[in-house]
Amino acid sequence: MKAHPRKARLEDVAKHAGVGLATVDRVMNERGGVSERTTARVLASARQLGTNRILPTGKRRQLAIEAVFARTPSSYSTRLNQSLKEVTKLVDLPVTIYRTHIDVDRADRLVAHLESVAESRDGIIVFANDLPAIAGVLKSLSTKTVIVTISTDIPDSGRHCYVGINNFNAGQSAAKISEAICRKGGRVLVIEPEMNARAQIDRMTGFRQFFIDRAITDRLSFFSPPAKTAMALNGILQLLQAEQDLRVVYSPTNSEFLEKVIEAGRDEQAIRSMAKIVHDLSPHSIENLRSGLIDMVLDSNPMQQAFGAVDFIARQHGYETDTTMAAVDFQFYTSENLPRTDSI
Image (cartoon, rainbow, N blue to C red):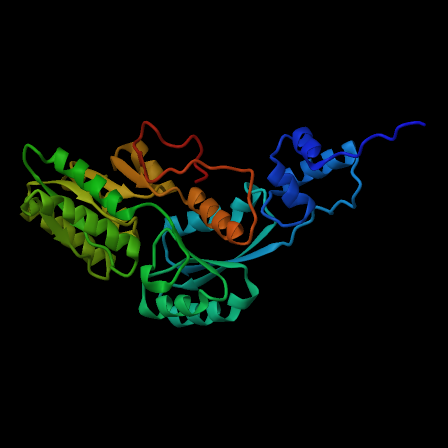
């Protein structure tokens, strides 16, 4: 009697596909948690080797993720938005990201939008100020969907994860460089930001704490810009004339006012002669690094953050991606190590 060929066992499929037995088991029993690419490889091996069971289709439910932005006129917000637009090309996951922009001063609209979409989304990514109304709605929605804060945290919100750099440490690093520049004399001019965003609060806290810990806060001078940019620029020039020992300018946020100050350095020697340390790359800061108008940028890696946020939400639903991205915190850039492309 002619022997029939033995049907492939799960162990055979695992060996042929180059994966673990547990991965094959998850694919064959449709328990999820395996990337689309790996699922396809396992099913192809199972078909090639032959099995005595009906194979699953390998199709996975599309995840719907909402990305909500408190819109600010900043290049970083633009970069983060672009990163969330492009990240689905990098992750091997069935994900659709819906991006919604609401003016930063309309917290009521942002709250209403979050409430309207929460039950129809598998996760929500929030880039917003740390305000009681926003924290409150996130806390109430955290039982309905996965909440991730990105770039700037909202700690008391019940969010499931914060994805972003350690902003306190970024401020400390900027302070360390500033102190080193002034070690043989001189002081640091700090441009104070609006304090609604947790990222800016943490950077400022870290920066101040560095000088407090060393009992050298007398080396700091603070400038709070008036609302009108022209008046603010005039005020900073007057300050530099009055305090001629200022050697460094530091700002925890890449604001429109900061850009005006840096541009003024083309004509104003008092500004041009100071070292300038800022946060987050932009087309403007890249140009000014190259021209020497600024000296150092601490960047927050928005694409890495977008990847981390999507990956976290997907894993909460049992999905995993074969794609990996190295976990890097903030990065230092000078004119010598700028990215090779300006599409940042």
